[in-house]
Length: 186
Image (cartoon, rainbow, N blue to C red; front, side):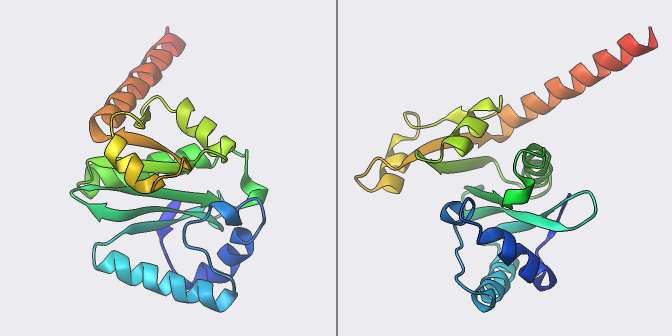
């Protein structure tokens, strides 16, 4: 489902990223194939320095379909950035990619908190974030951070995912699966 970024997949990812339904919401914009390759190389180097964590999202055949990233890592926290190519929207890739990434971040990389800034005009992403039981709207609880992100304008909603809340969600999911398995055996 996820793998470390690789220059070999740059062409396929660039073609998916430039779609008009995707491009406006991508944090690392590239306006040419060459620029995308350069940005990917910079991303790989930044990860080696511990500045960010970036993975390619794959479909069930191992083809690249988007990226998921943790940017601006500071004090075991960072900002999530995800995009998936338009042909893969609504096909069930987003949640499994996020859960695989969150498991890696929280349980292997020592991250304690993930923030998501989502443009208020991006209704699709706001609704998706609000559906997740482990996500909290942090506009009030992290008001100073939100004010910094918005810089005097009202552009973003701020969401937060804590390791504790995500772990609770994971434990509940395991319990539900175990209960379902026991019912099937009965």
